[in-house]
Length: 282
Image (tube, rainbow, N blue to C red; front, side, top):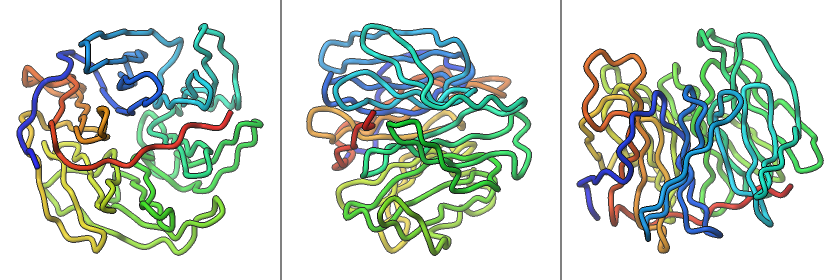
């Protein structure tokens, strides 16, 4: 397994986030949340695209049959391949924006929100289905971040960043229960941000202000650290035709002397074995 990184896309994203592999197009999706930009990257050709969104965008995930589902400042929306846009759930809340999101094994979108001032209890985690149903599952969140499922779909991992924890829930029939700590990030090591789960059930966690991605075994033991040169590491996801490459997003926001790769999309070739991610059913 590799631990050295390459720069996949050199950029100056204010808040790079949300790397997501789209197997239907062979492209990686990623975002600049505060720059209101949706990026795509094709590793086979090097081709890149950038789409400006009308408001801050926290996540973009592939939909079954094409197009994307977007977690936007004012709600969840659908974007078709031809550019047609429509709200699935429109709920503007002053001072609040979208953050990370993930598609569950049943094809629903689990979308996080947070206040711009990161006030405790100002964010949520909600479940959205293709018929427009929205259900708040967690309503006492500060900074809703990484969400992922174990290979057998019996567990859901979740990050509310200021807690310094990755929590784990029992998961069945689209429901979560029995929340408990999975790992606690020690003081001085940064804050947990985005995460992904690999084919072995290990949990990879990006560390904001920690300059690293860590891998934890299903038992919660730290067994690998990928050190990166910029502190604000935001999220990670496996991509490529064999889901063997780990893509990592980074941010420049708040850095007085950012490293040259801050805000870029990085990649660790041959880092491990990713899990195929479901598409949103809607």
